[in-house]
Image (tube, rainbow, N blue to C red; front, side):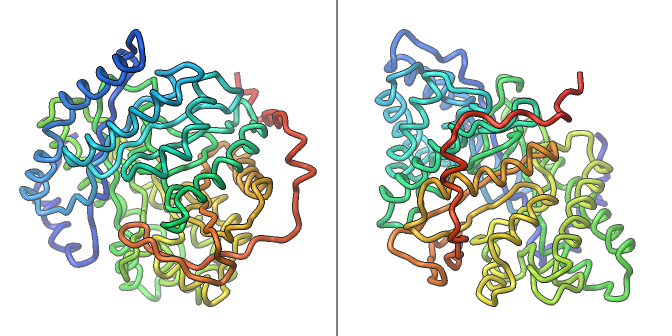
Length: 453
């Protein structure tokens, strides 16, 4: 794609005070050629390959950021689902690899390594089960390792046995990191219809259909979009959609420019640019504030889901106009703890768990960075995940859950993790249980819309 550099620089000058950034440059690496005769050889091959490919990434990212004057917030690595490298009874190998990768991430440095992942939407392999059972130890004892599990898809339905297992795993992870308010759970995402080229943590992994290595870019600019809407208070909603679309177009072009330049310098192919409006805990860098700029009194009030649908659709249209390489998730994220205004909406009782679930039917992902009471039963957690998975399966879209039981805390109390994860209010969970339903287990069949062949 040809770029007009003056157009890009003009866009940067116009938006430089509105928190436009490249949220992440993510290097995806295939590990399937790293299998060895035993766990020691396999892990050695993984580390050797990553050192060879990823070594130049941090320096290149800094150089490209300085050259174009665009902040690049995170450098990340996404791996082939690690469950594919190991068979059953390999928890020791998985833990050893996680510790070695955590050290590698610090030494490079990169912010996160994702890919402690399993695809179990239709059933488990021994390697899947070994990885899932290892997650509480891995996520609580490492700082930069992230995991994900795909438990549902439109083609296969919902693996309810996986939901039950993960309800228990999430609770166990929370308990093992209870000294840090369950932060281990912030590094675990449960998916329906997980994309293979997602650059955003904690759900990033390198799909088996990808090239041996690839650069994917995630761009974010909620502050930019909010400011553009704020400048047009009299615009009708059709005009607001056009404003968002044009803004997303400019942001996407910036992201592709950065991604292609980084890819060229590290000598790997460029993959996709993911235009997802991902907020941070900084004031002004908020998806909730975009919704309120459109005219909703407080995010969560009536009209919020319609406003979010408009925003997500316009982002996708603008991105598709700007690049033929848009992928990942691309839309609007609603990670509660990472969006200061969304957390304030919870304090004001404008936003609750049920409303957030409704919003996920039209946004990019799902129930993200939700804090719940630490004594929430694992079967209730499984039901919450199941409800969200059903939205993805029936609507043929990606949905996800990143939920954090905070041990010793009740609804209405506050928790602060700091940094990118921010802080939030513990949300109230409906007291009526679906335990008898979810413990039936099995698999919810795929919907009739899956029969497209």
